[in-house]
Length: 168
Image (cartoon, rainbow, N blue to C red):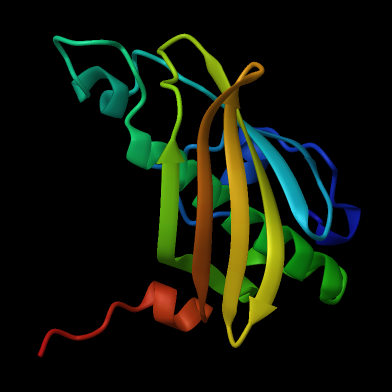
C-alpha cells in the first residue's frame, strides 16, 4: 500500500498489511473512516471464529468481553500506524513505525454482542504523552451500546516488537 495515498476506508486485506496481527487475533474487519484523532472500525462476529466457538460453548453465543478491549486497542494501534505514515516521507513502509501495545485499560461491559452481529468500535486518541497514547473507545452492536473502554498504549520501537527479550 502506498502510504501517500491513504484511503479513508480500508478492507481486511489492506488492514493486514498495516498491523502485526493475524487470524484469529486480528479483530479488525474493516475501517469505515479515520482522521488524525479518531477511527471507526467494524468486526463481524462469526460462530466459525475459534474464540467464539470455544466461549461459553454450552451457554449464550456471545463475544468474550476481553475481545472488546482488544478490538479497541487494535483500532488505536492502527490509527497510530495510519497517522504516523501520513506524517512520514511518501512511500514509508508501516513496519518503520513504532507500535502501541496495551499498557493499561479499563472496560465497562454494558450489553453482550452475539454471534451473527456486526459490532462497531469508535476510538478517539485524547493525548500522547511521554511515549504513551491515551485513548477511549465505545463498542456498539447497531445502536446498542456494548462496552466502553479507556486505555493507554505504550509505544515500542519496531526493533523491540520484532525481537523478544532474552530469557535470563
